[in-house]
Image 1: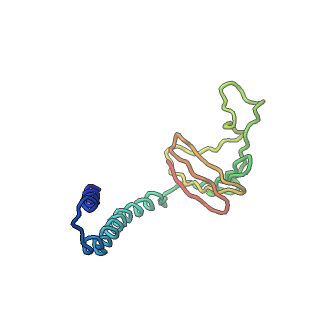
Image 2: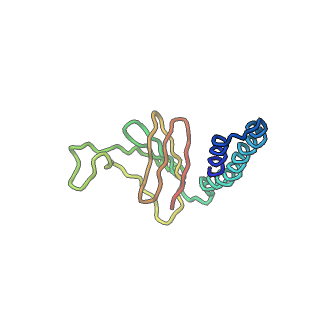
Image 3: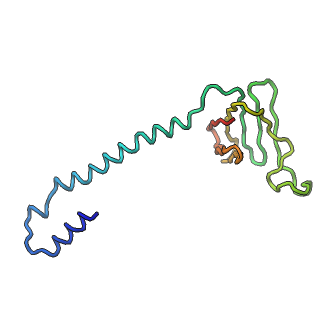
Length: 152
């Protein structure tokens, strides 16, 4: 930036200009392409790390599929036959003291402690967000797409 500012100021203030100095196609090409090449070399390792961080290991002991619907979540423990249920929000008039509005449900998802859990998250209608802040997990449920995350 400093070099470009100096060159621009010197060309504007100087009366000694020539056509060769004002039409430097080679240097313009170099300072346009060189930063692009540097950015590519910086981006490739970053993209590789992003994909490695998103990869879920195969050592998960429990797989749960969460399906977002308009007003409830459906859970399916795919490692066990017939283990599926729907979790509906509690109406406001049935809440007790200390319960949170729009967060309390009639059936909670239960996972064992100290176990690697794989979550498969999808949606039936619109985009939903499945999150457990205390585990540091937040995944968007998108229709016709199966997102995957894991936690312990």
